[in-house]
Every structure is written in C-alpha cells, then in structure tokens.
Amino acid sequence: MIKEVVSIDLPVHERLVVQKNRLQPAEVTGREQRASIVTGIHGDELDGQYICFELVRRIEEQPQRLKGIVDIYPGVNPLGLDMGSRGIPMFDLDMNRVFPGDNNGAVAEYIAAGIVDDIIGSDFCLDIHSSNIFIKEMPQVRLTEENKEKLLPYAEMLNADFVWIYSSKTVLDATLAYSLNNMGVPTLVVEMGVGSRINREYCCQLIDGIFNLLSQLGIWDAEPAPVRTPIISTEGKVCFLSAKETGIFVPAVSRMGKTARGTHIGDLIEPIRGQVIQRIESPADGIIFTLREHPVVYRGALLARVYGVSEAY
Amino acid sequence: MRKEILYSLKGLYREDFQIEGYRFGSGEKSACIVGALRGNEMQQLYICSQLIKSLKELEAHNAISHNHEILVVPSANRYSMNVGRRFWAIDNMDINRAFPGDEGGDTIRQIAAALFEQVKGYSYGIQFASFYMPGDFIPHVRMMETGYQSASLANLFGLQYVVIRKPKPMDTATLNYNWQMNGTNAFSIYTNSTDNIDEKSARQAVSSVLRFLTRMGIVKYNNHSGYIASVINEFDLLSVKTYDGGFYRRLKAPGDPVYHGEILAEVIEPCEGFVKTQIISQTDGIVFFAHTAPTVLGNEVVYKIIRRMHE
Image (cartoon, rainbow over all chains, first blue to last red; front, side, top):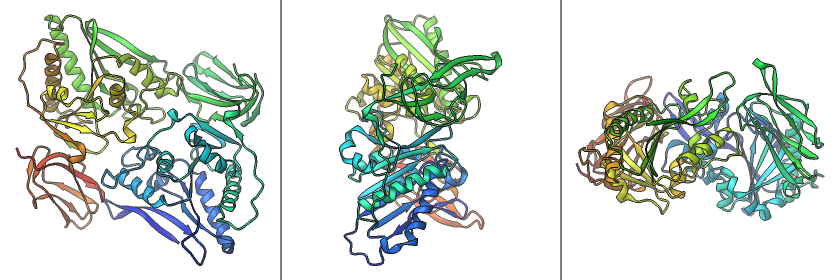
C-alpha cells in the first residue's frame, strides 16, 4: 500500500511527495514487528533503488510469509534522485545534515521531521547509502561505538563483508541514523558501491542480508538464510590512505577485497610533469574496503581505506 | 598591515588555493574577523574588504591600541567564489559544516582545521554569515546558546537586535559554535544580502565591528554609538509559513511594523494569475526576516516576526 509520508507544494503545479510502500500481512493484529528500509537521502546514491524494488517484488511474490510490517521508503529526497543531485536541489542542502528536522522550520527541516515522525515506532530501521561519486565502498555496515552493544547483533545479520564501528566523535549529529538511534529506533547505516551507479552483485548480497534480518525479527516466515560472517573493525585497525598532494589518482588494483602488506594500490600522478607524486601501498595485510573512484584529488582526499589485520605502518 | 598566507593547497589545473589573512597591530590575540566561507558570500567578502580598508587607515594613524592584534580573513573559499559555486568547488562540501576540522581528514576538513588553528585563541571572533533560506534580515548579531554566550557583549556592536539561537545538531560543525566551545566570544553578523552587494548594510556592518572593537579598547575610533539592542531568542520569533506554492508577492520588508490581521503577502497562481492565498499576520510585531525569491513552496517560512514588538 503506497502512502504519502510528507509533501509540499512546489511553485508551478507540482508537489514534492515522499512516499513509502507499507507491506503488511492481510490480517493485522497491531502486535507486529515493524522494519523500515530507507534510501535516497542523497540523490546520487542509487543502489537502494534496486534493493527496494527487489524487496517489494519478493515479498509480494510470497505474501503469506509476511508476519510483520515492512515500510519501504525508496526516495526520501525525490527531487535529488530525479535530478541526480546529492542534496535537495532548491536549497543545495545535504538532507542528511538536517535531521531530526523541525515541523515548524524551513522546508528541508519540515520534510525531515515528517520522515522521522513516520519512522518512529519501527522496531528496526536500515538506511541504505551508496557512498558518493568520488569513493567506492565494499558492502559495509556502519555503527557507532556507543550503540555497539545494541546494534552489532543486527549488523551481523546483514550479510555484509565488513562492520565498521566508528568512534562517536566522528559521527554527525544531524544524520537520520544518529537521530533515530537517539529516539530509540535501532538504526543501521549500510554503505556500498559508488554514487550514480547500481552494483547488482552488492545489492543482491544486501537483499539476502535484509531477508535474513527480517526472518530473525519474525517479520518474514522463512528459515534464516546463511550469511557471511563480517569482519568487525575493532578486531584490527582501519588505515586511511590519503593524498599527500594534489594530483590524479590512478588505481593499480582492479577490485577491492583482500590485500597484502606492500601491495601496490595506485599512484598519484602529475600529468604535466610526467611524475609520480605518491605511490600508494597497502600498509597491512587485510582488506581494501574503500577505493577512490573519481581521479582528480586535492591534498587530503581519501584514496583508500584498508582494514589491517597485521601490524600497520 | 601584514598580509599573510594562512593556508595553501596546491592546485592541479588552477593556481594554488590560498587563504589570506590581514593582520593589524601586534601582541595579544584580540579579535578575529572571518568573511566568506561559501562561494556565494559576496556581501561578506565586500564587508571584509571595506573593514580592511578602514583598519589600514586606523593603523596608519596609530589607532590600533597597544598590545592588540586583529586578524581579518576575507575569504576562505576563493576557489568556489571564482567559479560561481556555493560550496567547495570539487566535491560540493560546505566548509562551514566541517569545523573544527581534522588535520588527517578529507580536503575540506583539512582546510577547516588549518583555518581554525589560525583563528582560534582570539578573545573575540566575528563572522559575517549567510543563511540558507532566500531572504533578507534586519541586520543583527547572532550568538549560539552554548552556555558561553554573552548577550551583553553582543550588545556592544550597537545593532538593533541580538538573536540568541539554541544550536541544532546541524550547527555543531559551524565556525561560530566551535569558536565558542574553544573559549572565544563568537558573534555572527547578518546583513540583508549575500549574493549581491548592499552598500548600506555593508557600511552598517563595518561600523558595528569598529564600534565593538572601540568599546573593547582594541581600536580608537569615533563613531555613532548605535542602538541599545533588543535581545531576542530565535525560538520566540514567529515563523509565518505559506499554505501552497506559486508566485510570491511580498508586501512587507524587514523592519516594517505589522499588525494582527494585516495581509503580509500573496501567493499567486502561476499560470492563471489569480491570488490563491493571502498570508495574514497572526500577531502585532516587527518583520525580522522576509523571503525574497519570486516563487515560494508550500509550507515555506516567508517571514519571521518579532512578536509584540513596536517601532
């Protein structure tokens, strides 16, 4: 059942409408568990679109298995998605910096508040992201140190390769996930792929994980599917490899994943002088879970993240 | 005056990105003034240019007090200013959402960290700020309610209003917030323009800063003593919203008195031209903020009114 979550009137005969699809059993008792799947906060992140499609398709294929409520929000920034714009187009504003929003505030805050109000009451929420157009990510679940105890069991169900537990100080207070966790809705963030693209393989991996989680929550009546055991970041060390100077990044690895200490990850070059400015090597045995996609970089730009299991540097 | 490069970042296809600082006087770090952090903040850069011009003349006449140093940073984002972008030109990130920055972080966090290192430690921090909603304000001084704010100090700018804002989560990565958390008395000055230059309010902003610096004993300058400000909490401003979208006909400007039941604006049907709705004032008061764009969205804040305030 498709419902309007929040809407505003645009100037010329059009409305901005945030919609959700509520999937629920034919007979509702009021005691059902409820999971919310949210994506499209950033209009240039598209993997979530395929994931939503596939979730709806599979659930509607076997509606008798549905024992709880699944609310699917495929486009919480509809104009951004339509225009391929990361932020909310009219305001050039990152929507994931205005939560929890304000019903009495500016338009972006009003929309954000409408979305949060609608999700409140869920037993679990998943916010699906696809990095941005600059950085490519392996499927990974992100959560904060302070929510580790509550969220890690959910994260392990999601069939991700990697669970990255952040230190709380790096988390932005105005994100949807931070706001919902603060309001008592256990919320995980998944990052995967790269902006403006859909990676079917990654999407399918996460869809299997979501169905596993829905089974574990009693929302989906099926044997929980076997899922990967993710690497948990706290078991080793996450190394950030950044550009030491401005240049063009040329990767030397064809894909992310397992790496060994000293592996050539890429070079930072200066075309006009024909020089290699920086050779980027893996600092440890482990996995490359983030890799630069857009080649033009300024000093400080992230080139890769390596989760190291051996002594780093 | 000493012109310095506070931060430099090598350009690949452009000249190097630099943040320039203009230092006046010497000794104790007394006041730091920051202009444009975003590429569209032309008015904020212009105000700084006029302030630097005035401070240069004051310094030539020995009117910077002994043992006081003033730093002015007119623009921390010239890469965006020069290509007509609002945020960091490469990845569209907002520097004023990256403070206090991170030396080991991505590019804008490195820029924010380097800038913050230069501007922190001053007794007073003044930023010429802009708002993300399209509209005009009555020129005012704004402070975050962090527990360290001092409205009585903000009063010394001599502008009509001091606004205290309770920080929202999205404010915690701004320069103003981090200045305050780091022990600097931080003020944001809002004039009634951003993308375009408004000479009158720019002059008012320059005068208010010179007035404040004079009253703090940092410069010797004789100017009008300004207003005794009314201190208002942002929360107490009445937000007036539209019901629907369309062309927008604004009937009141910032500073105008309004009365309960008075028509403040009209929303016009965009294709047929009739008045769809009238926005009626729910209170007596003074218009503090007024929307400026030719069109409006539904549920958009078009006015903020200081309730029960009279001229």
